[in-house]
Image 1 (cartoon, rainbow, N blue to C red):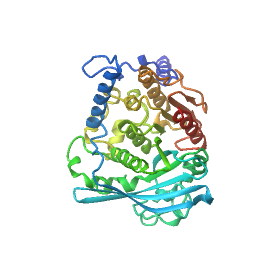
Image 2: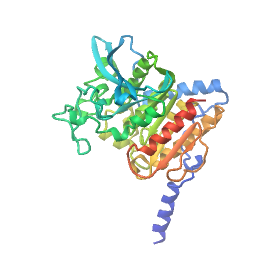
Image 3: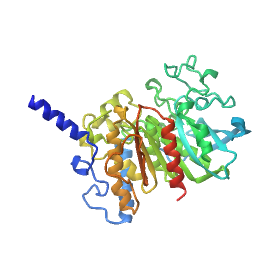
Image 4: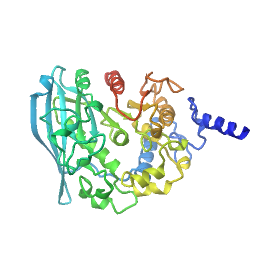
Length: 414
């Protein structure tokens, strides 16, 4: 009986609400070079930052191509009175040609008509197709494969139908975003890189770069999604209605993993929002809790580089961890959101990442995370690092969007 009680006690310590570095003695330090030298100046931090980027590219996310030389934006729709006159809707096909092959994916943009232009923007990938984020009949139905599931029973033989319009609108609070003065831009993940194992690396942007596949640091799917977000940013820089200096990149779940990696690689994103991105996103692997490296590499073998597989069953021994991703974003603002019922994403592990990254933000003379203990439910905290844990499960809710928009307005106005 005593052993059982002590085991429960130890487990409670692992899941405590206070997260000092001593709780994870093997957690790698972002402010120490791989050779053991300490980072003491901002110039040294830039060198250390490059070192961390190389580690992630070789050991986890894989190597991505640079900005394509042959990229073209084809605006095929402009509707100035969309959503009852609230917004201007633009739809743009992004064409990329490399190695004699072409890939195309569509960007949907809503711009608030009443706000003073140019406006700040939020860009993110979606799960079911652009037509799913709003019931607007003017949105082009995706031509890519669309799942038919219990949650989204709308496609026929993998093709989107009109029944798919607005089926994911609850997670995309378009009216709220526009009312807050932000434009919204989104793209469909499946048009960029397939999330199906049977189609992995065969569709979207992957066939453009065959030389990046037969190698250990191959161009994985999360990296492809992140790379496409930067291509969306390439377009936003050309749109006079958008303030491209104030663009936030957003993602939920696996697409939150992509948003973090996009923000780490592309400093043009002024702010990064991670909603329940979990393992391979905002949670620490070193805690050994929640979704682990083995599951990521077996259930989703296309997400990360082949090199990441050597770390299966070594979550607590990694020579890097996800606080490094947030450190790569520093000193730009980042918001990490968790949900109490989302055990797979390990809310405590997501908070631990925010707290550990506070050290780098403060090293860079920033206010970082304003607390040392995880806040109560539905009690957001907002420094240069923002965080909340809300009631409920794996989702994007009205509560989440309220905090994201408050945070974005606060931090992008600085």
